[in-house]
Image: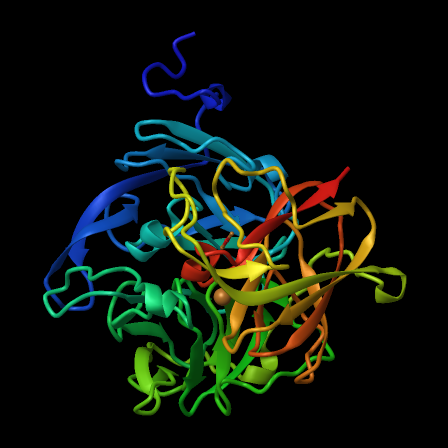
Length: 452
Ligand code: C2O
Ligand code: CU
C-alpha cells in the first residue's frame, strides 16, 4: 500500500512503478519573444520550451501527468491512434484530473511521425497560455537525417509589455477566430537555429496555435515535404515544395520537411509566413561546421504507417454539415466547458465539448466497417476539422484537387464539400471538432461512436 496517498483521484489507482516520462503541468512566468516577463503562463516541465516527448514505434510508453495547475486538466495526444481510455478527453474518455492529482497514460503507437499533445480541458485558455508540446514517434529503423529539428509554431496574444490580452473576442469567435499578436517558433521570436552545413535535416513543423492557419515558405532552399500530419507522403504524391510555393498548415496540422542545408558555413535559410505586409521571417536555419555534402535527392524515404485503407465503393456515407448558427448562451456550468456563447453547429446542433454531456454521438459507426464522411462547409470560413483516434484519407472535394493523403486534421475550405474516408477500426467515443479552439468551444464540436 502507500502508493498514491494524498491527491489521488477516483481513477488514480492506475499508478504503479515509475513512468517513462513525468509531465508536470504548472503555472509559469517567462520572457516570450523579447518582451517583458509574461505572467500567467502555463507550462509543461520546469523551464524552457515545452518538453519533446519521444516514443518508439510499436513500444509501450507510460507517462504520468502531475497536475500542479489551480484547475482541472487532461492531456490529449493529437493524431495518435491510442486506446479510447488514453485519449484525454474529459468525461468522454476519462475524469478530469483535478489540481494536485496525477494521471497515468499508457501510450503505444504503431504509427511513426510527428504528433503533438495538449490539454482538452478549458482548452482555449490552457493552450493559449502555453500548454502544448511536440510528440515524436521514432521509426523502427530511423531514417538517415543529419539532424531532427522540432518547431512549434504559435502566436501568443500579448500586449507591448508582454502580458496576455483577452484570449478571445466574441465577435471574432463568430468569424475566423481571434489571432495572436506575436509569432513565435519554439516560444521565441524569429530564432536562429544551427543546423549542419550541407546536411539533410528533418524539420518537424507543428501548428500549435489556437486559431491561425500559417502559409509557410522557405527562401532559396532545396527542400521537400516528406510527411504531413504524421503520415509519409505516398510515393506517387509530390506536393509543391515550400521553396517554391507556400504550404498551408491549419491549427493542429504538422509537416515534416527534408531540407538540404547550404554547404557554406554561415549561410542561412529563412522560414517565412505570409502576412498582409508580405512574407515575414519567423525562424532562420544557419549552416555550421564542415559540410556533410548531402543532396536533397539522397534523402531517405519514410515507410508508410499501418493505416487500413478505406474502400469508398463499399462504404456507407455519413454527412456532416458545418454551419453558422448563433444561439442562446450555452451552459457554462462544467469546469472544462464552453466559452458561454454558441456560434456554430454540426448538423444543426451546437455541440458542447469536454462536458459531462456525453450521451449523443453525431453518428454511430460499426467497428471494422468502411465509411465516407461528407464534410459540408456552409460557412465563409475555413475550418481545420480534427478527428480523434482514427486516421482518414482525403477523397475528393467540390472545389479543388485533393491528394490522397492520410491525416487526422483536414483544412476544410470556405464553402467546400470534402469527402474523407476511413475504416472504423478503433472502438470508442472519439471527439470530432474544429481545431480553431474558439469554434470548438462555441459549437463546432461533437463525437463519433465506434461500436465494437
Ligand atoms: Cu488536438 Cu480534440 O484535439
Ligand atoms: Cu472552425
